[in-house]
Image (cartoon, rainbow, N blue to C red; front, side, top):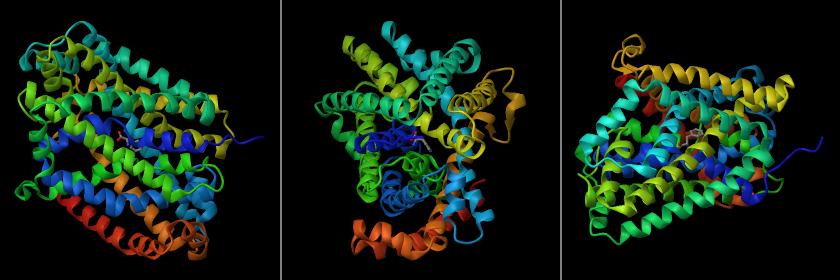
Amino acid sequence: MKIARFSRLGFILAAAGSAVGLGNIWKFPYIAGEYGGGAFVLVYLLTVLLIGFSIMIAEMLIGYLGRKDGVTSFEDLAPRNKALWKFGGFQGLAGLFIMIFYSVVIGWIFHYIVTSLSHLPSSVEEAESTFNTMLHSDVWTQLFYHTLAFIWITYVLTRGIKGGIEKMNLVLMPTLMIILLGMFAYAVSLDAFSRAVDFMFSPDWSKIDSDAFVTAVGHAFFTLSLGMGAILTYSASMEKGSNLVTNAFWVVFLDTSIAIVAGLMLFTFLYQYGSGPAKGPGLVFISLPAAFYEMGVIGNVFAVLFFLALAFAGLTSSVSLVEPMVQYFIDRFRWSRLRASVSMGLFFYLIGIVALLSNIDGYKEALTWGDKNFFDWVDHITAAIMLPAGGLVMALFVGFSIEKQRVEAALRPQLGIAFDAWYFSLRYITPVAMFIVMLSLMKVI
Ligand code: PHE
C-alpha cells in the first residue's frame, strides 16, 4: 500500500494549522488580560523560544524517525525499556480530552458567525447577557453547533492525511492569515494601537506570581501543540529528507506571530471602541462584539470575518487533536480509517455534551468540583498538567533514551554547531525548567 505523505508546504501548513488555534485567538488574549499583559506575554515568549522550539524539534524527530502512531514510534525507537516508554505515546489521549471542551467552543464560534451577520450587541451588558444566556441556559443551540463541529472534524479525519488534513489546511490556513492581516492593518491605523502595544509589551513584574508563571508555560505548550503527539503524528507523514529544524522554525514562527497579531488587533479594538482589555473567556464573545458594534457597518463585516477566522483556526487544530488516537487504532489494531475516525469523534462528542451541560443552570451544581466545573477542569488538567508532562517525557526520551548517534545523524547536518546547545538544553535545561513548573503546580492546585 502506498503511504500518503504531506507535501513540504502541506506539512508546514498542517502543523501550523494544529498550532494556530483557539489558543492563539481566544485564549491567549484573555489570559494575557487576566494576568495584566506585558510580563505575562514575556514569560510566554521566553518559554516558546527557550523550551518550546527545542521540544518542537524533539517531537518532530520522534515522529519522523518512528514513522508510526505515537505509541509504536516510542516503542520502536526506545533501545531499552520499550514497555515503559511506549506509554509516552499514550499522551495522544490528551488530545481527545482537549477536544471535549474545544469542540464546544467551536460550536459557540459557529453560532457567533451566524448571529453576527444580522445583529451585534449595542452594549457590553447586552453582549454579556446574550453570551450568558447561551452558555448557561441554551442547551439546544450549543448542542446543534457542537454537533456540526463534530461532523466537520470527523469527516475531514475520515478523508485521511492527503485528501482530508492537508487539503483543509492548504485552503483554511492562508485564508485565515489573509483575514487576520487585513484586520490587523486596519487596527494599526487606529490611535489606540500604541496603547495595545504598550499593554502587551511593557512588563509589570508585580503581576507575575507562580500561578501566572505556570499558566504562561502551560500556554506555551498548548499553543504550540506540544506534548500530546499531534506534531509527532503529523511528522510521521513528513516527506523523507525534510529539514526538521526549518519546519519547526516555521511552525513556531507562524504560531507566535499569529498570537501577537491577533492580540494586538483585539486589544486595539477594545481600547478604541470598547472598555479596554477584558478578562476571562468572555473577551472575544462579550467585549469584542460590543466593540464591533461601535464600528458601524464595517463592524458586522469584521465580526463575521473574525469569527470565521477563529472557526478555521479551531477546526484545523481539532483534527490534529484527534488524529493521534485515530492513527493509533489504525496502526495497532488495523482499524479502517473510517471506523477509527468515527469512534474517536464520538468519544469527544459525547463527553463534550457533559462539558456543555456543566455550564448549564440546573446541571452545573452536579458537575462542579471545588472551584471548577467539568468544562474548566478538563481545560486546566490538559493544558497545565498533561501537555507539560508530555513535553517532559519527549525531552527525556530524545535526550536520554534514543542513542545519541541516531539523534546526531538526523539533526547535526541541520543544526550545525547549534546541535550541542540544543542537545544540552533538551537533556538538562528543559527537564529542570519543567520540573520547577510541576512543583509550583502542586501549590497551585
Ligand atoms: N495549539 C492549539 C491551540 O492553540 C491546541 C492544540 C493543543 C492542538 C495540542 C493540538 C495539540 O489552540
